[in-house]
Image (tube, rainbow over all chains, first blue to last red; front, top):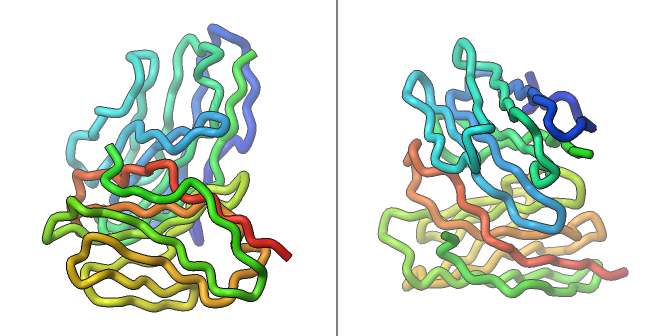
Length: 113
Length: 112
């Protein structure tokens, strides 16, 4: 596609529920990144996929967070047993082989009530 | 850990040049300087990047000092739509295993 697409754009969930956030990167981009941004805060790196290599999960805050990337394209970020502190905007970005600039999506605003 | 230092906020009059400074005194020889911006409620947007030569594109100019310890992003004719948080990041080019690390950036307010 022309840009990075994320869905849903907004998600409200009850504490304790699981949620899945989706990211469709730009076609041909081999690198895909997930970040989150809490209200008024900076961007926090979560996880990174590059081609067929093992993902860099060093930024995941707990084992409730996981992500996968199927077929080297679409990625899903899953948060299990959501907590109120998980409320944030979750941003996905892609780039060509990790080089040059990243293209970010518009994000998914997650609210845990 | 951000390797850059930026002022937390700046104001600029509409139509004037906005000059955003960034210090990166510990930059390595193979690290590039990247600039991104984030307009309210949007994802970050790539602006420009460079190694040691000055760079210009349709959005901005990047001036890097000869010792590469600091740089300045220049928006030649700022508009209200340039109001955003601007992030200066240093990163090894092509280092597929090094995600961008965003600091706090500079909040630029363009004033009519």
